[in-house]
Image 1 (cartoon, rainbow, N blue to C red):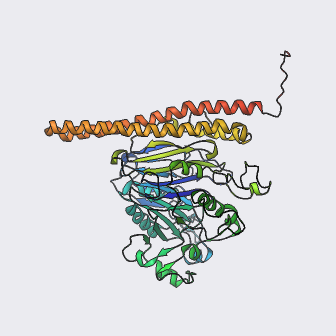
Image 2: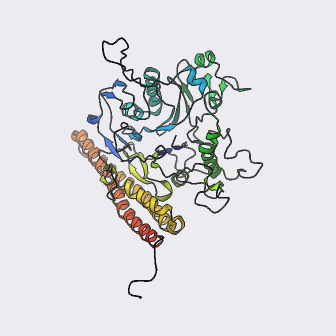
Image 3: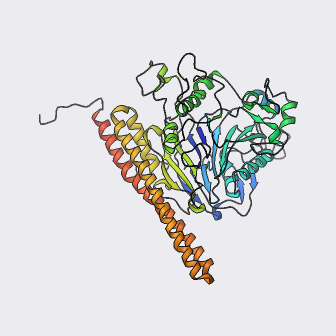
Length: 524
């Protein structure tokens, strides 16, 4: 299992944006190179076949343009992971979760069944495709929706029609709403809207802890679900909730897991994120309500202060700083420092925080804050989503190691710096602070230039009303070009400063090699 998610409602964020963010972590012992690309409508398949499950789906003929952060290797399919489309709908998929045995017994996963025998044999069996999964979800949903709610409905229809072979949490957002979808067995699903004044934390565990069936089957304002969820739960005795409010139940207890492995791998991450965002509560004493191993840490809550992108970058890079559980720390014991799975882990492929800003025009509303590699050794930088192409430094990641792209450069820095964490920390912190500051300045400057371009276009249209349509089209082309220029500027900044950081970290680490010797060859 892998990945960590934090979702921030528009009234909980520092600037009124909806923000969805997730670490995409590969499985243990695997490191998947990542890239950042734009997908044109012409490049979107009209007939889709999954690499892993072999499911085949005909797709609509009217996809929109979208930008994603997929794997480089296609051995497990596209795995788009995080993306935003030209309608300012954003997705992150998926957060790996788990459902319990009762759910799996009632609605088994839809797994690929290979063909058996030869045609004409008595025991011949045709291949039976599996359902959809992480490989497919963004590609099947994002190009065809204009709101987050539409995205939830489309995903739900796909799950009910084709099923799934794995348990996943899927995030879909727009400028007004954030929806979190959890798959329940092979064909069922639930979705809850993140309250505007709250944040939600999800650490590889089925997380929704309250669900209003009356709303889901009534006004559908805050909750959505598969059409037969009530009957499914009743038929298989899945609701374990005691003394719940009328019409409510706890999906975490009904569908989820709470195992000793969860207490090592999952719950500590939710504990740490909420400890940071609600620091006035007691998190550490023997009387603390929630500990790293608590099964009842809330799915969402109101933060004590508005949440910034820096908070998100810190949390999704964190390794339990300030606690006895920090693998780089000095507090606690050798055992406690490696007791729990950190958030910022060695096998993070990327972190993408997608910010949909209500105060920006639609064309430049969505910004994707991207980092590649292990979070403690890098920083997220902003890239506009509504573009036709992305910078080569992030787009053209090679399958093999190379310093010519951001992914591998960051992986090299992390591997070198890990062994000398404190000796290299100043250089890494200086890089991270400078990169984020430059990113904020670049976005503000680009936004201001786009406002001026819009004002000039409006003036031209009023003067030449006969050619207004052509003027508008040319302005749109110019705007996209300006967004791409901004992205290139950010990429060039990263290229220069990541190269310098690699040089600094390599120098420091070289001086600390075990076979070092201070006396020079000529005694001086």
